[in-house]
Length: 160
Image (cartoon, rainbow, N blue to C red; front, side, top):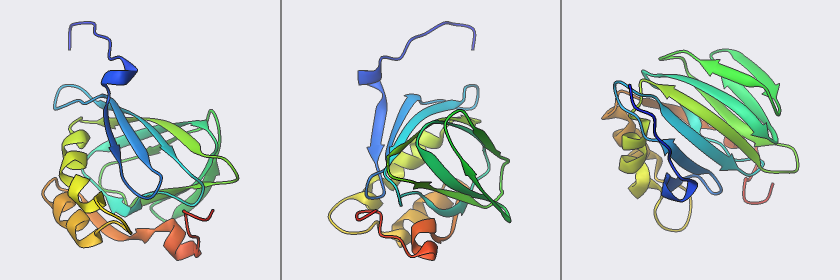
């Protein structure tokens, strides 16, 4: 990438996934450029346990998260960064009393294409269609390995 550019907030590609998770792609990247995301989710919400072939860096801007990477579970807050290498199982969940916000970098980029393919799994009322999520993930080399932390921890994100 050898050209400067600006992406206006209003122009970000946006998806709403699990009950409260909004993912905005400030930079929908590709093989030569990372994806840069701005994600907000309410306490008790987060993605299912999964892995994918790209690396991720996440910086917590607001709120707090419980993060599981491989066999380790940690809690992080504003200013903390967590890194997940390619193909390592991971998940996270917003904790506390306020929404959490993260800025993420995915390398290589292209994660936004998976999110576009996942859109149908999040459509409609009720929980996401995990079978449709797994099928879409598999098309991009990713794998859904288990439920979100809220399920394993017995939390309802719409009531947290």
